[in-house]
Length: 302
Image (cartoon, rainbow, N blue to C red; front, side):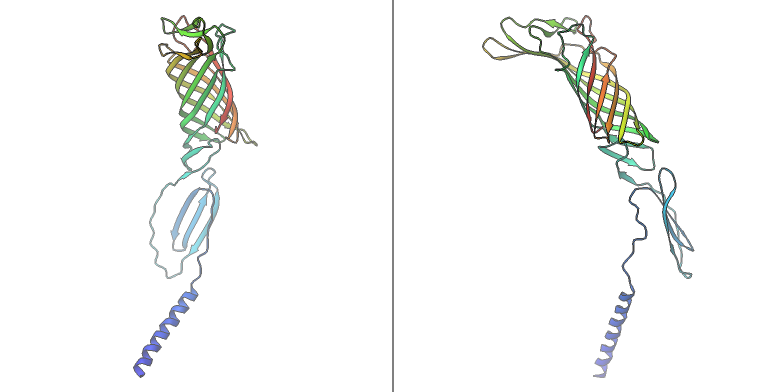
């Protein structure tokens, strides 16, 4: 019996000791809470461990905390330096951004432009129509930029579709022997619908962006380099029996490289207006119906 009493006494003492240890432990406190990614510096010395957070742009100290070591603590230190990568919205880059927040370089994606295109200088008042001609452009599916202050310079890769259209009765676009385009007649007895010229381009926008102070407006200006890889003509009409007929050809030669001047003003990188003009003619062949496209429209996500 005395042996059992001793065992119970030992077990009871152990339980009481564990209870006193757990009672002395406290829930961990949050020593430092920073919501924006910045530079983090951790240093150790015999005095303790110090955590310092500084702003990645200005270099100013945001906050710091020191955890003191006891006088009999054994200290072992080493040094390591690294960078963190964040998905973050920087001013002027709304849709996507992958960047090292300590670097002025970044990668982003810009949105789309939709507008009406005026074929200037075509030499015919009854030719291609501004109200029927349009442009759809994905300005940059990938965009590399360098930031400084409230501005940045970017280089991107995107796509552009331009559709120049004429619905004037009795006139349609046809390809000539030099792979140019000219005005021709519809077949006799048919009901004309429309005739259109389509041009597809790979584009490289080189743009300067400025964030206007004390506003949510962003201004972008710069050249857009176009590599015009595809062009076609399509004419549609109804025959005397009411059947839809088409005349399609790719035997035309657009100018393979053109430069446009681009400018946009957007609100909070969500929606805005843009203007785009090319001082270079669309077609390369001569003689040919030719013109300089001027587009005015809206931007989404730029």
